[in-house]
Length: 231
Image (cartoon, rainbow, N blue to C red; front, side):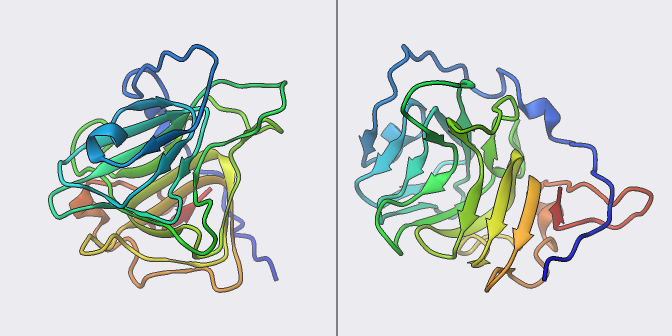
């Protein structure tokens, strides 16, 4: 049974992130191949096309940006994680493509069934404070730009401390989301629509440490209540 929140749509407090900068400028020539990446240095930059991990990668520095233009992050059965003291924001951006034979999925995936882990904490300072994963709001959901993510709990597994920001995408949560290993108890979701079903669940007190991370979530209009999941 689907239950509606019956709450009006909250204003988007993260709207100012959807410009260049803070989203890094990416110069692509119109070709978007898949890039195999095996090191943190090769990952934490801008990419034209899908990024595919070929090994486990641990990010040890704070405020790392991974910017993908017209492509997805294919964990390929491996783990991308932030170490203690490390933090990262994964940004999906691109152009609004209406033709051609290729569809671009603007979210984390894994081409290996039931494998792959995204285990990151968002920065606690800087332009993307509190933001772990985001889609550029200037992208429009279409048959060629897929912004809608169905999360089943594995393939990949999400362990996130911070915000998942899909302002024009639908987020279908069918599996459990935990916080970053050793990270703060903080998870927020901003999406066009949010559907939680099956075994979809988040950890207890999912927003209890968001203030420590620096993430300020929208409140329910005309109240002082903060939502963990907001449209």
